[in-house]
Length: 468
Image 1 (tube, rainbow, N blue to C red):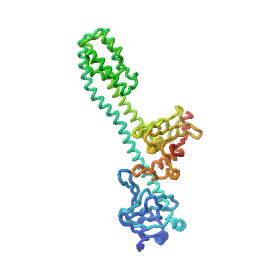
Image 2: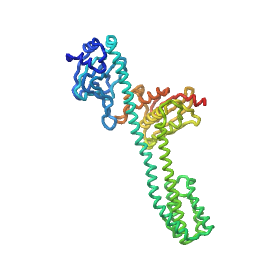
Image 3: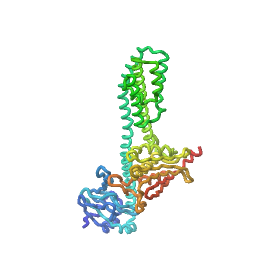
Image 4: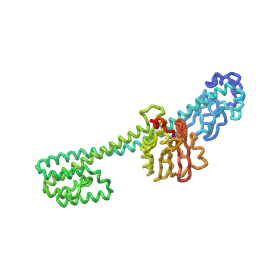
């Protein structure tokens, strides 16, 4: 039963306060008053709302499980209006719409909305404004949610990528301290030998071999162990310290060079020279490892900076598509490694620039690649290709996953629609992609069959760059 002051409550309602009383009376006469207890479900997950709901008092919410428990995505309190509105294309909510406290609402059923539009022009106008505000709120909230979810995934991958070279630097630096002490003692011993110019020339040839270790390539673990064992045997046969074998094995030094050294230096002098050479080779190797690890960190930071595009304004500009795609692949590399997925990137060297928003394009590639990584099996394959065509520049992301079922293909770009397990997807990624595609004057299409799914994005070419 409707409360006797229902019209007065509508007149005090935030969204309807400017509506003429006659139209409020029409609402009160045609609507149904309902009272929800705390925990009551107003609209079940995935079902269309029964109609329009004018919240008179109380609070209702939609909460979605994002993997770490329920999180609030939408909320309505007294003074709000939700449900089916005039001209809206509202779909079912991503989860139950639940009363979080005793809530009083006025419901107008869906089949009465056409009559509302005809009879209550001022209410209709007010509701259109509500719908616009709701769309803005939805766009802002779900875009932020998706960005935060993407940030969480990327930060985990980036932390993993940074940890490997950082740990390598830490290990090498710790070893470097010990090797510096060894090198200092070896230099003191070497200085006391008073070696001749011919002896120093042979020693320098071995020292230079330490600096040319890049030329030897990468040995397999078995090959490296065999070489180390052979050098240990060579040192043992001559009564020299076998601990120097490991440092020498990592270099390009040859047994011919070692034999040439024994021809000019013998006895305790030879042992001192070998310790000095091993210490020097080890120091060079450690310095090279530290430099390589630092370059990996620098390269990753550069890729992250390019991916986030954090030093540019949000204005359309010419975008280097090769760099955009490469940066995105870099920040997702750890996830690919975790599943042993190969990402093959094929970009022609003469690929023209496109016109768009760098940060948004990176977000498009990130969502499409992340979905592909989720779809492919362990040891799967993803291909990233780009080519120039009459309509612009086409980017194709192809995976060998199970494909998209025909029955759901038409819904994959709908907000909150997902085929992933609970907690593994919010159903916002492809909706975000769709909206960013529109904002960048691009187009997207998808073809899918078992074993092959392709997302094809066509972007406008940057004509200003082409003319320059």
